Length: 235
Image: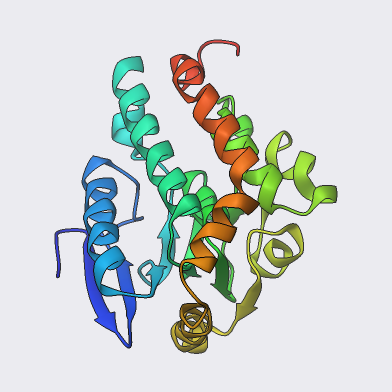
C-alpha cells in the first residue's frame, strides 16, 4: 500500500511503514492521516510495526507551513499529532522506529512513543528544540520525555533544548542503539521480529498498565493544554 508520503508493506508479520515526502518528512495532516490508516491495517494484518524515514531524514517535526498559519491551524495540527503519538504509545502491537537521520521536535517525540528505537550513525541531530526557538513544550511532549529519557538528561533535553548526535541520543534515551546506516534496516527488522514473538494479549495488556499513569495524565490535560500549542500563551 502506498500514498504520496507513506509506503506500507507487510513482511514476515511486520508492517513496515516508510515515511518519504521527498523533503524532511514533516508531520502534516496528510502524513498523520496516512500513518493512522497504516496503523489500522497493521492491527489486523501484522504482529509488529516498524516505522522508518527516508535516507538522512527521519522526521523534522510538525509542518512549518501549518505552524505559521495561525493559532487555530496550529492547535488542530498539534492535537492531531498528539493523538497519533498517544496511539503509538498505547498501540497494542510492538512499535519499532528505525531512525534514518535527523529527528527533531515531533520527530524526537515519535522516537519516544515507540517500544524500541534503533538509529543510524552519522552527523544527525536528535532532540526537542522547542524552547530554543521560542515555543513552550506541550504537556504530552514533556510527559513522553519524562517517561522515556534518562532521568539525569531530562531537564537538559526538554527545558534546555539540548540536541544530540546518535551516540549521545542513546545515552539520553531517545535511542536504544546506534548502528551503521547500512545495517539499520536489518537490525530494526530483527528487533521487530523479536518483539513480534511476544505473546498477545499479554504484551498489549502489560504495555497499557506500564504506561497507564502517563496516558491518563496526558489525556486529562490535552484539551486544556491545546489552547497554548502555538507557544504564544503561558501555561
